[in-house]
Structure formats: structure tokens, C-alpha cells
Length: 271
Ligand SMILES: NC(=O)c1ccc[n+]([C@@H]2O[C@H](COP(=O)([O-])OP(=O)(O)OC[C@H]3O[C@@H](n4cnc5c(N)ncnc54)[C@H](OP(=O)(O)O)[C@@H]3O)[C@@H](O)[C@H]2O)c1
Image (tube, rainbow, N blue to C red; front, side):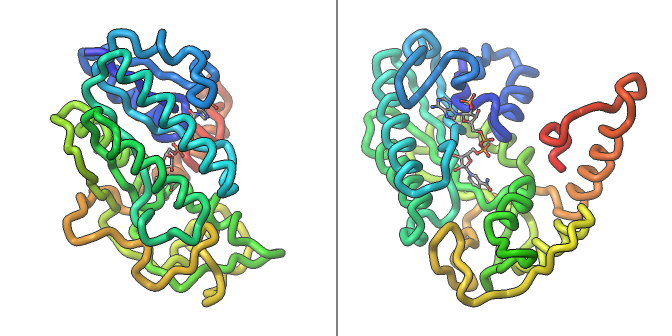
């Protein structure tokens, strides 16, 4: 069976590719850096020839609402058309828990539009909606920073390790299409401000984190439960503190000279 991972060089995509390459399947990582561009369609037909499953974990290069909508609509249309031509039997896509509730956010409207195109297409599909990745907390804190202060909205979060997201996507892609949506989340809930504080402290980042009732999430007003999954969500095993200490260890190891096993870049350590 041939499986194509669109966005196979990204955070989640590279983890999926590594996991599936340990199996008997033929796995192709596709992205612009390997000559496949979903927005222009370049390289898509060749990459999809003979494929049974496509896993789309690509992301818009910009979080701006208009740019993200253009990206997800155009690339999803191009991808689904190419899949029809190639006879693909299962389209798997990664989205975000709560897209349907967060329509004030341009980025979430774009993810919702991606989901709708998939549901309306004739190709059997599975949509996996994940909560925020542990690896993204630092970036989210950056987006919420004004001066030296992080303004966290008064919201509960249930973040998940990127590795766990990748494992669920592998399992889903090897099973029968759900023709529906599966929510995935981590095992613990946190207040967003508490989580950001713990993440920043581990990096000796001195920014202050405050709860700001006016703060938004990707431009959307949120209430306490807007980002939480429903009761039927699949809960992954990795706890935040376990992930954090492993990431800190890997980051220190990366500082060692290459001959002592170090030298990996920050992106590879997840820190
Ligand atoms: N971050 C979170 O907390 C979170 C939570 C839930 C769901 N998600 C969803 O998870 C998905 C994956 O996120 P991620 O953080 O793993 O993404 P990422 O690390 O930013 O990777 C994005 C991938 O998309 C590829 N790409 C971008 N433009 C492309 C194009 N025109 N054609 C082909 N490939 C293209 C990139 O490779 P090239 O640059 O080489 O093209 C890269 O491989 C996203 O759709 C996001 O909405 C994220």
C-alpha cells in the first residue's frame, strides 16, 4: 500500500513518516521542498500515482485569515481532484478541536472550510481534530505577547504531544475511513495561563503571564470550555511534565558536540 503524507516535512508530518516507514508500507513525504505544491498543483499527479491513502498534515505558511482561507481551500480542492484522478481510497486530514465554535477566527474558518470540502467530496475520509500541541505552546505564547507580558485568555486547554497526534493519524490512516470526525486530546486539563507559565519557566523565559479576559485565541473570543474536546474524544497518554522533562533533556543533549551525540537543531528536539 502506498501512503502519501502531504506536509510530510512538518512537525506532525515528519513524525508520521518516521512511524510509517517502520512498517511494510511505501511512504512518500510530499511538500514544496520535495517538488509537490498543493496550492499550484505542481507535482501532485505524479506523487499520487498508485497511492491508496493520503494524509494531509500541511499548514498554511501564514496564520492571517484571508491567506489561510486561500491556502486551505485551494490546496484541499487541488488535492481532492488529484486523489479522484488517482483512485485514492482514503483521505485523512488533521484539523483543530472546536473549529465550528471559533468562527470569529479567520484561521479557524479556513480549517472549517477545509473540513467542509472533504466532507462534501466523494472520497472516503477521516478528519482528526486535535487540541493544541505541547510543541506549539511556545509559539502560542509568542502570538499572545505584548511587550514583556503574555496575555492569556481565561480558557481551559487539554494539550497533546505531537508524537501522540502522529500515532493516532497513523492508526486512523491504516483503518477503514471513519467518514466522520475523531477528536483527540491529552490526558490533562490546564488553565491556559498556567500552562504558558510552566512552558516559559522551563526555558528560563522571564516574560510575565497574566489572565486577560479581553484576550482572544487566534482572533476568536473564547469562554472557559471553547477549546476542550467532547466526552467521546480519544485521550492520549503522554503527560505534559513527562514531555517537558524529555524535551529539556534532549535540548541539553543537543548542546553536546556532535562526536558526543549532540548537535541537533532546536526543531528536532521539540524544545
Ligand atoms: N499547532 C497546533 O497546536 C495544532 C493543533 C491542532 C491541529 N493543528 C493542525 O495540524 C496541521 C499540521 O501542523 P504542523 O504544525 O505539523 O505544520 P508545520 O510544521 O507548519 O508543517 C507544515 C507542512 O506543510 C507543508 N506545506 C506548506 N505549504 C505547502 C504547499 N503549498 N504544498 C505542499 N506542502 C506545503 C510544509 O512543507 P514545505 O514548506 O516544504 O512546503 C510542511 O511540511 C495543520 O493543518 C494545523 O491546522 C495544529
